[in-house]
Length: 171
Image 1 (cartoon, rainbow, N blue to C red):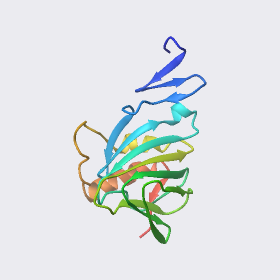
Image 2: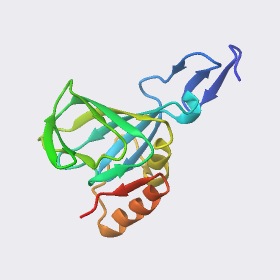
Image 3: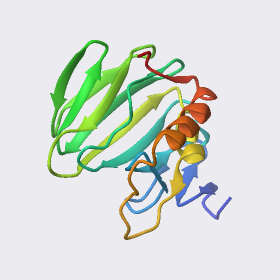
């Protein structure tokens, strides 16, 4: 604890029991599947209520279709264009668009534009942020995320994801 009675937590301060503040340049950043994810709020920081993640998604990138079995997911597109799969339908989400994915729904997003997309995620309850930290690779400042590494990498990520009640979509 620091002098103000706040617990320091990796680049942010968690007030006991007040506000959580994470400066713009803080949070643990990882690369996964060609994307860059910065964890802005963890379950430890929010009492398990939610996790919050910032993402940078290059053209053509995004996860494969999948299902979250424990948490709902919501995202807000800051820039770029994302094709969103929602079960059997797809739609385009652009800057200012909000998307809510209830748990149990087959979904994915893919950057179909020519520019990098930026978005923020909210997962509730918290916990799925740990998947990003375990499956991702520590990002190096000033470098782009490496491209997807093929079937072996996809299988490694799916195995880790299964521990977080995540599964690839059938088919």
